Image (tube, rainbow, N blue to C red; front, side, top):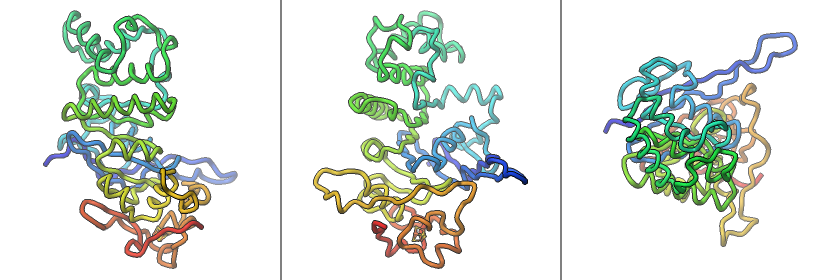
Amino acid sequence: MTALLEARDLVRVYEGRKKLFGAPVPVRAVDGISLRVNQGEVLGIVGESGSGKSTLGRMLLGVDPSQGGEVRYRGEPLPPFGTPQWRSLRARMQMIYQDPLAALDRRLTIADQIREPLEIHQIGAEADRRARVAELMRSVGLRPDQAGRYPHELSGGQRQRVVIARALATEPDLLVCDEPVSALDVSIQAQVVNLLRELQGKGALGMVFISHDLKVVRNLCDRVAVMYLGRVVEEGPSEQLFAEPRHPYTQALISSVPEPGRALDSRVILQGEPPNPARRPSGCAFHPRCSLASEICRADVPQLDQVGPGQMAACHHVDTARFDAA
Ligand code: SF4
């Protein structure tokens, strides 16, 4: 089956901060990532802040250029950013950001913002566009009387609904959602997640869902990729990965999520912060925080290997890995 979106060996290096007397230190924000999203599938990308999740999300749409590897959309290489071919493809691939207020134009009404992509991509006549805006507003749970309002007149949840309606205007087949609910109140989060689940369940919409909230990811995603310092350290079907995480980092992340019925003292609390990406530890980058680290972990970078049906993990001790609280 041809993937809707496929990334191979993606690399993104930023120029880090300059040392006092010397050259800037390069930071490998994304370091050789390969993944695929199939039609109608939701791929979750999780990891702590600084793991490279958002950079990867932008690279998947070609907004952030890759310095190595490639992204293919329906088997074809993504055109270079900003070219007419790339712009017309953007109608098929949309992005939803964390902060809806920043994503919206404060001077435009809700209806005008939702209509804008139809105008940019010259889709439909004026009457069709009006009807499409009304239909989109209905589909995301916005009332017709809100059409003439401005972003500051809406709640955070309503604004994110506008952003989603706008992203869906051109009938994309891929949505990249970067922390789409983390700026919202908990009750509103559930509404927006339910809305995304409904939209995804209706057809062949593929989704990349970037989040640090494992509960939401578990709820929504078919497959999950776990990132640590610019690399995928584990990937697999969501149910399997949450039931039997194989990488110590995934085990620690999952264990830190409070679950009803699980004793607090059985939770593994991940110690310390992720290392500075400009000073990536040798071997397995997780070794300074891993209670299982051995000599080989400090020397050799572990590769992603198959550890179960559709499940991969990059750990030298994956067969015995049971991460303990440090
Ligand atoms: Fe821990 Fe070693 Fe596995 Fe890295 S390779 S996660 S340090 S056991």
